[in-house]
Image (cartoon, rainbow, N blue to C red; front, side, top):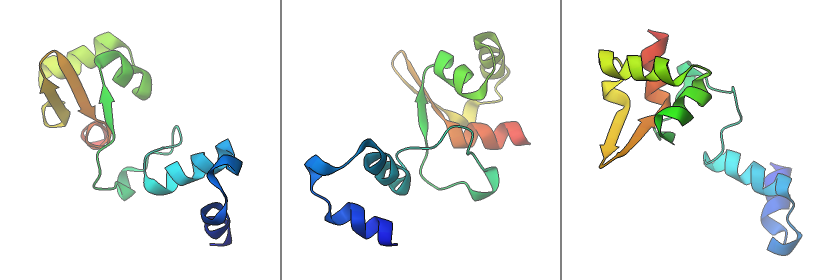
Length: 98
C-alpha cells in the first residue's frame, strides 16, 4: 500500500521503469510471463495478434496452432477482422486446460 502511494506522489519525470512496470501490472496491462492462472482468470481478455505470436506465447509451433484452428478447437477464442486474427489468451488457456 505504501508503495502505491509512493508511485502516485512521484513526479512523472522521476518515475523509473520499475514504477511504470508496477503500474502496468496493477492495471492489468502487463502480465508477467508464465504467471497465467486459469483458476483466477480475470474477465478482461488479453488479446494476442497473429498465429505466430500465439505459438510463441504458448511455446508451441505455428503448425500446431494452425491445427488447433482447423480442428475448430479455438473457435470461441478467435476474433477475425479482415486479414487479422486476434486470440483471447485467457480463453485459449481455458480451452487447452480442458
